Amino acid sequence: MGASPLPFLMAVGISGAASFLTPVATPRNTMVLEPGGYRFGDYWKLGLPLLLLFLAVAVFWVPLVWRF
Image 1 (tube, rainbow, N blue to C red):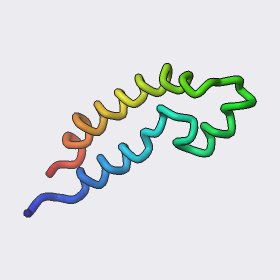
Image 2: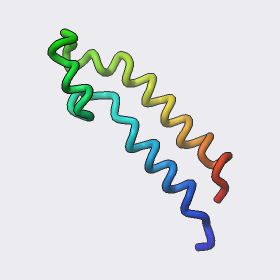
Image 3: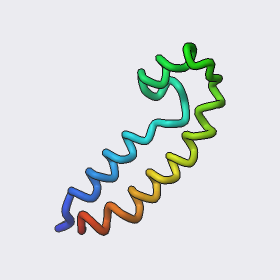
């Protein structure tokens, strides 16, 4: 295709790191669930804005830094 694979790989890397919505997404989230007194739905309160930030970075910033 003649396109650089770097923007695609960076978008996949950023998307893979955007696991904020559930406590079972990463081991760290699961470890703080019970000691912190969190409920399953509490992760959406902070996770959704962070996920939208990651989406904006993946869609708008990655193509500016790593050109196709």
